[in-house]
Length: 181
Image 1 (tube, helix red, strand yellow):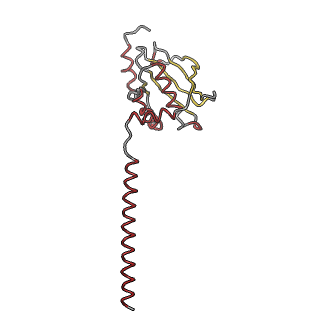
Image 2 (spheres, one colour):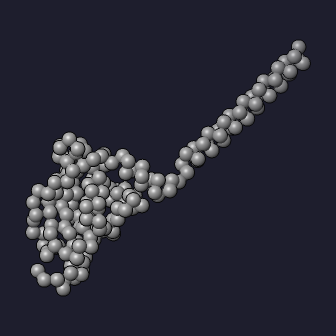
Image 3 (spheres, helix red, strand yellow):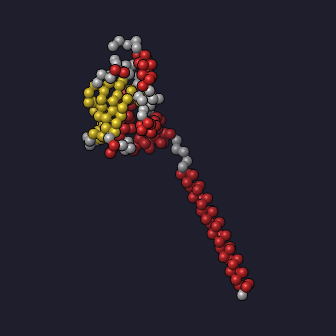
């Protein structure tokens, strides 16, 4: 009887060891698959993936306003609309008098439409219309993620320069000091 029990014990031990090996093997394969899935994507592919998901937007010029920073360059208040005409946000933009960049001091997407790509799509439309880099002015903490994500479209031609802080506006204005106006 004891020999029969010891044989059963050995059999159970072998089965347990085989199960542990199988679990380890499965865990290793699953871990490898996870690592392969997290393999870095090249920037161009990532930019294309973002671009393909952008919604269609229309930008409407509401009015020109005398924004003192860009004088003598034009400044505008622009509304952002979905393809069905619904207003989803607005932005302010100023064009450098040298026509070498666009300044964005404010971009505001309504809460119910945030994180759906409307802000990035608006920047894309501006970049295509003006074909110059976009410079954000005084990016607030809550908007840093937005500007970072929008920068992922750089491989497709959306150039976002470094943020221009309020204390540096006078220095930037000196670039076009020689222009009349």
